[in-house]
Length: 63
Image 1 (spheres, rainbow, N blue to C red):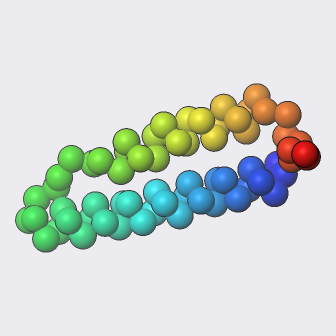
Image 2 (cartoon, rainbow, N blue to C red; image 1 turned 90 degrees about the vertical axis):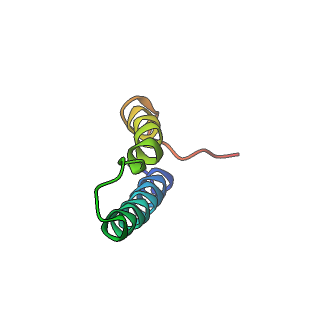
C-alpha cells in the first residue's frame, strides 16, 4: 500500500473516531442512545477506500 492510500485510511480512521466520540457524548448527555449517524459518515467513505485498496493499481499517481 502506497503512502497516499495509507494517508487516506488514516484520515478516514481519524474522522470516524471523532464522529463516534461526538455521538457518544451526545448520547450520554441526551440520556438515551441516539441514532448512530456516524455510520453515514464512515460507511460510504470506507467502501470507496476499500474498493480503491482492493482494485486500485496500488501505485501513487505521478503527474
